[in-house]
Each structure stands twice: as structure tokens, then as C-alpha cells.
Image (cartoon, rainbow, N blue to C red; front, top):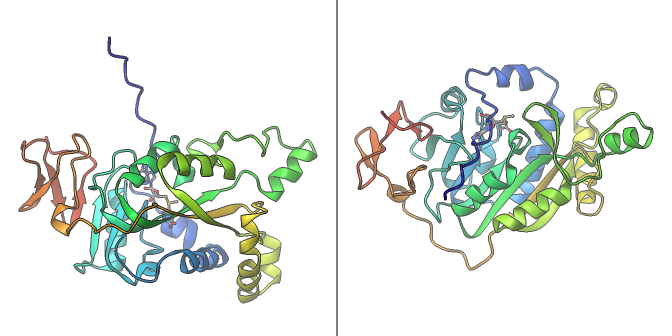
Length: 301
Ligand SMILES: C[S@@+](CC[C@H](N)C(=O)[O-])C[C@H]1O[C@@H](n2cnc3c(N)ncnc32)[C@H](O)[C@@H]1O
């Protein structure tokens, strides 16, 4: 007897969201943006063939992949991708893809580097998404993952003083607002290993994320101090934000050519382009390419 399949995880849908103007532009987060870029410069290869930014949003961090021949901008939200496209343009090297991290539409050996930044905290089933990402990464590839850390100094202190009910030491993700999770560093490490990644380096960031410090200290000093503190994350991961650099072990494998980049997210069959469609040998399901965005979220009726 077949078991009833469990419902797919709920998705934190950014369709129509004003994330860029609500969260970043003019919102006093220059420090957070700058320290994230520092980490990417530490962890990402300087050059490569094909890079994926999973959950790229409006493409805030895409310029950190300037040394890659092709850059695949992936997001669940079509409007986020439209914003990314308006900012970055329609150059051949950018490939915009609407897709769900739980059903990624990429062939094996699609990428030699990838990023997941400020996304995993929205995932109710982070291990499932990490498995999907691993399946399209080539041997020898580098994957950089950022997560919100439940084992941070503020949570540890509040818990010790009895001002917080949930334990920062327990491994289970803590959902502080619906579809917003903090993770324990050991949980993320286990999930990465279970997905087939080899975590190699870890840094902790945003140590100085306090309104008072932002008012008192110049941005350059805050960023310089964070840079010095980041390596502490390998032994003392107590900052609110952690980045892990992982590798897919093995000798570097050749990437699939661009014409073979996509697979059907429902059947796994290879997809080929026919005009403004992506189709498989079986014909159905078919997927649309609209205004330069590959729409692999929902098939055409
Ligand atoms: C907080 S934004 C981060 C954007 C970008 N990575 C950054 O750091 O600026 C989270 C992004 O994750 C995307 N996202 C959330 N769940 C997703 C899913 N299941 N599949 C693909 N993208 C998803 C959202 O659409 C949104 O653009």
C-alpha cells in the first residue's frame, strides 16, 4: 500500500514584496551589507564558469560573482526576479529562473559555485532544500550558506536570565515568526553533511549589530572590527549570523553546457528550448520563458 505523501512545505512568498525598499535602501543596514560582502570575498572563488544565487531576491549580492562567466539568478518570486533583471540587465551571462528550492530544475553538474544568503531562515524544511542544491552542484564546487544563528550571545544571555523560554542550545530550528527560523550551528552542519557537502570553513558575522553601536561608531570602523572578529566563528559561533563554506568533494567535474542546464522539476527529464518554451522529449509538462525569465515554478496548462 502506498503511503499518503506529506504536503509540501509552506513557502515564504515574496511575490509583490517591497523587500528592497522596506529592508535595505535607506534602512541603516550598510554594516550588515558590507560584512556579508566581506565574507563572500573570503569564501567565493574569484573566477568560475557558472554561479547560482539561490533565493537571490532583487540581486543585491550578484556583483560579488563578477568573475563568473554565467550567473544564474534563482528566486521563487517572479517580481523579485523582475527587479533583479531591471537592476542587472539582460546580458547573456545572466540567466533568470523562477523556481522553488524544494523542486529545483537544474541538471547535475550545473554549477561550480553557489550562494544561499538570507534564505534558509525562511525554509521549513532546510535539509530538503540543501539536498536539492547539492544535486545540481559539480564535484569540487563551492557552496556558501548563510544562516541566522539561534546560539547567539543575546539569546544565551536572555535564556540564562530566565527572560526567554526557548533554549539556544537545543538543535531544533526555532521559528520566532511564522516561516522565520533561527538555526543551531550544529544542526546546519549536520544538514550540510547529510546532503553531501563537506563543510570546510565557518565565520560569524554581524557581531556589532546594535543600534547604539551603529550610532556611535563610524561604518568603516564597524566593518573593520567585524572583519577581525569573523574568524572567531570557527570556534565561538555566538554572533547572530553565520556563514559556512562547503565543498562537494571530488576532482572538479566539467559543467553541463548551457543548452542542457534545465531539467523538469516534476519528472526530472532533461528540458530543451523550443522558441519561448522549455520542453522534454515526452512533450508535457511544458514551461514558459517570459520576458527573459525562465518560469519553472508552474507548468503551462
Ligand atoms: C530575505 S530575501 C533574501 C534575498 C537575497 N538572497 C539577499 O540576501 O538580499 C529571501 C528570498 O528567498 C526567496 N525564497 C523564499 N523561499 C523560497 C523557495 N522555496 N524557493 C526559492 N526562493 C525562495 C524569496 O522569494 C526572497 O527573495
